[in-house]
Each structure stands twice: as C-alpha cells, then as structure tokens.
Amino acid sequence: MTIEVTAGEPRLDALCVLAGQVRELMDAVALTDVGEEELTAVTGELSALTGRLRAAARTTPQPFEVAPDGTLRHLGNAVTGAANPHALPLAVERAPGGGVRAELVFRPLHEGPPGAVHGGISAMILDHLLGQAVAAAGLAGMTGTLTVRYRAPVPYGTPLVATAEHTRSEGRKSWADGRIALPDGTPLAEATGLFVTPAGWLQRGPAGQ
Ligand SMILES: CCCCCCCC(=O)SCCNC(=O)CCNC(=O)[C@H](O)C(C)(C)COP(=O)(O)OP(=O)(O)OC[C@H]1O[C@@H](n2cnc3c(N)ncnc32)[C@H](O)[C@@H]1OP(=O)(O)O
Image 1 (cartoon, protein in one colour):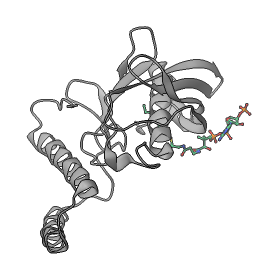
Image 2: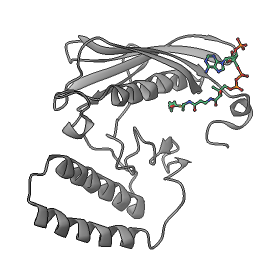
Image 3: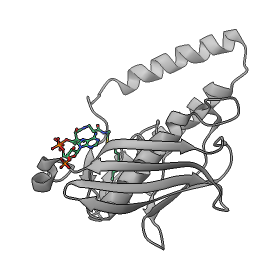
Image 4: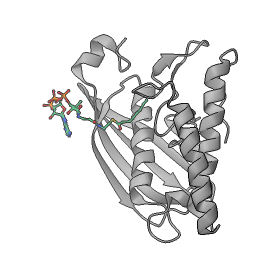
C-alpha cells in the first residue's frame, strides 16, 4: 500500500520513504533467523544510523498540518501517518455508502496469539477508524469509550477491509460503529465507540487552529 505525498515537498517525501524502509526493517527483525554474530553486527550499524538521525531531532512527530492541496494531514499519526514507522500506514477513504473504509494487511510483527493479530492492534485500528467516521460527519472528538467484540482471530498476511460509520450524536457526544472483516464481509472484530468533542475544539479545532 502506498501513500501519496504531495509533490513539491522533497524532504517530507524522503522522510516517508525512510519510514517505509524502517517498516521493512521492523518486519525483517521480527522474522530474521540469522546467527548471533550477524545480529550483533547489524545492531552496531543500526546504532550508528540512529545517531545520524538524532543529529537534528524534534520532540514530537510530524504535526497536523494543512498540505499544499488544502487537505488536513497528520504524517506523524501512529495509524495513518506515512512518516511514522509504527503506522501500517492505514489509508482511510470515504465509503461509497457513507462512513469510511480502509483496506489493510496486517503483518507478522502484529502477532498476539499464535498466527493471529494482537487484540490491542485491532482495537487501535478500530479506534482510529471510528474516530475518523465521526470526523467525516463533521464532529471530530476524542475516544471516550471503545468496546470491541472479537468474533474470530484476525489473520495477518491476508487482505482485510475495515469500515466504520457515525451512528448518532447528542450534544458533544457522538457514537460510531465499525468492524474489521474479510473481503466478503465476514466480520472478525466489531466495535462501538463514544467520541466526545472537547469544548475547546469547538472554538479552535483538533489541531489547535
Ligand atoms: C480524524 C482522526 C481520528 C482519530 C481517532 C483517534 C481517537 C483517539 O485515539 S483519541 C485518544 C484516546 N482518548 C483520549 O485520550 C481521551 C482522554 N479524555 C479526555 O480528553 C476527556 O475526558 C474527554 C475529551 C473524553 C471528555 O472531556 P470533557 O470534554 O471535559 O468532558 P465532560 O465535559 O466532562 O463531559 C461531556 C460529556 O461526555 C461524557 N463523557 C466524557 N468522557 C466520557 C467517557 N470517557 N465515557 C463516557 N462518557 C464520557 C460526560 O458524561 C458528558 O456527558 P453529558 O453531557 O451527557 O453529561
């Protein structure tokens, strides 16, 4: 899955490419079977590379910002941020029938129980998607509660589809439902969540603008 980075921003583009390379590194670490000597040698090289990146460092990830095309983006986000190696990254889009959807493939490094994705990783994806469904309805909020029903083990290495939709609002409170499913629609994990719009956001917006 590739995330388009707005043209004309070569440094951010390079940062996202670096983050993608680090994701490959993380996968390689999780699966490597090379011997102890090679592990020690690679650790030494990585330590030197880490030092080079820390030569000029910020204290927070890439912020919420307005991209040159006018859209709001958050390249540092732990779920969607192309500049964050922790992110899949998830590419969320508006669903044709309303709500939001994302296609995703979990990887072996997301393993919790043997052969399946960690429940907390699934919950993280659902949390974000439900939040984005609420935001798509014009009601951005922070998660107040998230309830997940794990119906079947979520596999990694398999194409999956996550969907979510805003269901109702009362004042600053909004609810959303969502699920991670097989491509044929069979639900594996289902969630419902309550999102509260902090009073301050009504004046300033989530990015503090
Ligand atoms: C587009 C991007 C999508 C991103 C999605 C990602 C979402 C996330 O992961 S957010 C991170 C996880 N969540 C958090 O860190 C939230 C931490 N908590 C908070 O910041 C605050 O407690 C917050 C914002 C939820 C509520 O604070 P505040 O606005 O002061 O609430 P408050 O005025 O006390 O209550 C407002 C209403 O919400 C209800 N409420 C507040 N918190 C909760 C809660 N946790 N559970 C249930 N109800 C709640 C109150 O009962 C009250 O209801 P009513 O109006 O009926 O009396």
